[in-house]
Length: 55
Image (cartoon, rainbow, N blue to C red):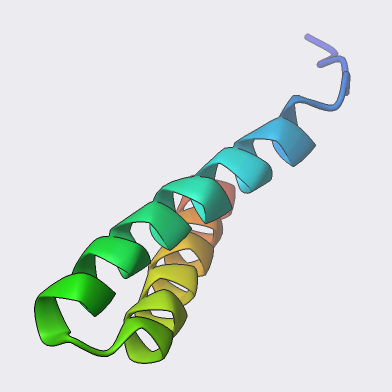
């Protein structure tokens, strides 16, 4: 019935950002442009976070 807010949302956000950053580094190495890849990774992480909040 009532859900506890024990900080798990904050942990999920941090993990999505870390996953996105990791993917960004991989994309950066693949594209030979690490700053671009890191930005892409952060965007992917934030998109995953937004998608998770809607569900």
